[in-house]
Image (cartoon, rainbow, N blue to C red):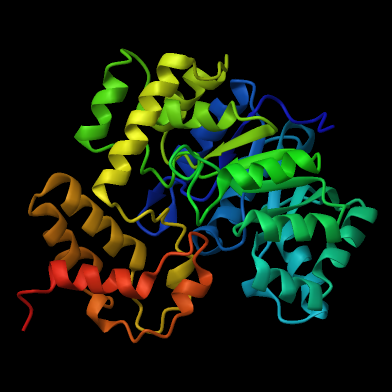
Length: 372
């Protein structure tokens, strides 16, 4: 169906190499070159990634350096950037310009949930996107999704024109009652919708395992922790593309080493993954993927994912490092966990449906006990 797509592995441009607050163009260009030279061509971005810097980096490091037919580019329509139907076309046209292209191969209705879908319907966003397709400015129309399988089925019934669905899928979330990866995958397969996987490494959480979990991967005698997570996702039924948000050449080289000649997990590897899952559950980790959707609307400017990462690190490593990063890095010039006014904007934006307000209480209890 997607003739231009080469292989089953894509470059997610949400976590690009950075030099301060700017994308490191030299490093990103090397990554682009290596990716394409290795036979891969799928790139994924969105306007909100890196505060708009992802799209312009795509333009400067990919679109201006390669002929258009050499790469596949996915972009998304995000609910933050339009209020009415009339806003959608100007925003879409600005995305084309920012990316330096005259069409997108895939264009997704971003982060669909029950409430966000209602806004998209009221603004006729799906109809607008289908019009862009009719004009040749989109090759394939789809959605990215964060909600229950029941909601996904409702959307697919209402808009059978959807050609592809992007879902969060990794071995930790596979049977999670909030994320429902398995159930969402089953719905996609039921309706014959090819699946793009996001967060196969769960925001890096499955690449940097705690020692209690890492030992099961080490016993396999070969392959990084990330490799087993990505192969789990890529080997799932109905998946045609698995994205990885690579931040440096080292990560890319590792990913390419096992995706060039992709093989699904065997029985021994699957058993090791099951042991890692059990370890994660026993540690009661906060399952935050650091998508940072919660940060944009926080009135107290709390860097929520970073504070959650500090608490997870404290649980895993039990060292002073987490305290230092909490006090001297992530809350030095931003809000502390105790500054939360419980407005709930973060929870409304969270794709993982985390009880963020309660979790911030836990963070404050751990790190602010000595504050005056």
